[in-house]
Length: 251
Image 1 (cartoon, rainbow, N blue to C red):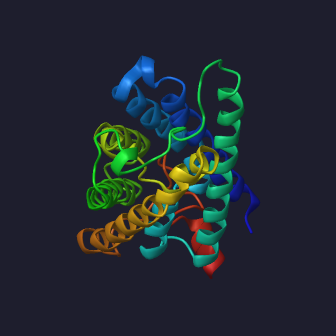
Image 2 (image 1 turned 60 degrees about the vertical axis):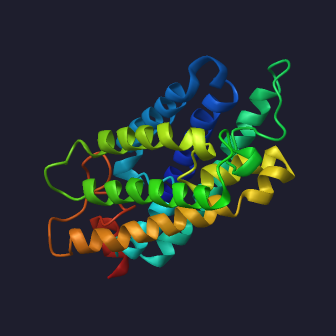
């Protein structure tokens, strides 16, 4: 196990949940959907450049699945990342839960920045609509990440592309489902929100993973292997995606 990359994924997911979901729990009344979208996007952008050279800055099980299917990381690394991401999301949500308890009158049960459909959706989107939304949005996120983390014209701008993409996706996703595109981001807050959130959690695990897997398949068709080598977010090679580090562990 590469402790450095696992800690990177743990820390990155913790911070994404704390600041992204925190913008929903604490700041939604003041910043609205646009502010929430920017909070998620800017957090990912910053983390991409700080943690990208270490682990690739997946901080999302759907991204890790896409990288695994694309052949950029070995199975063992993917499992390590998934564990680190879920733990990071839990502790990020725990820190946010503790902070929320310090704000008088701020409720933490029921919603707490979780995702939902039907009566738990801001617009009452159906279960099929939620599935479609999360699949399509996660597809685009993972597809963009797979494309820009290849060495090529986007080198050095990959973190920017990732952050902007997540912000745009949140502008669409927040009004519909609360905006997941990340199973770990959904799991952490749901643990503290209660049974209503947990009862719908399966969709926000399955749909993003399906979207991420489809993105890897389509990316393989549009960007076949044998092209430019991939790099970590931030333009540097990293063990978290198809970097020399990951490849050397497989040899």
